[in-house]
Amino acid sequence: QVQLVESGGGLVQPGGSLRLSCAASGGTFTIYRMGWYRQAPGKQRELVAEISGVGNTKYADSVQGRFTISRDYDKNTAFLQMNSLKPEDTAVYYCNGGIAVGLLPPYDYWGQGTQVTVSS
Image 1 (tube, one colour):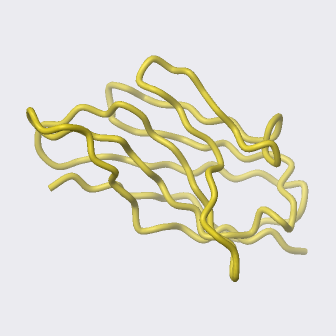
Image 2: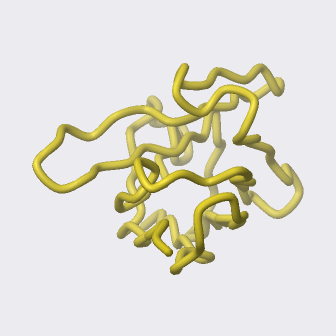
């Protein structure tokens, strides 16, 4: 069973930085894309950033220029470098992966979420 495990969340002051990691594990699989979503209290889950299998990236307008998504393809890991954090970035951040197990078609896998709180 494929699992996505996030790490790196926490409490940071406005203007600070955090780096989230998401590691995929469990059997033989192919990762087509990886992304980060977030959900703030009372709001819908939204896409923050996404990276394709060939390294193309996409960002939400609200994080463009502040956040950077990257991948370590050998270690099946994705990262989200978050700089110039704002209080409105406070949310639970979820890792998402479009992953194919064996010969099966790709399926959406989710991590358990990691809390990011931006506050003074």
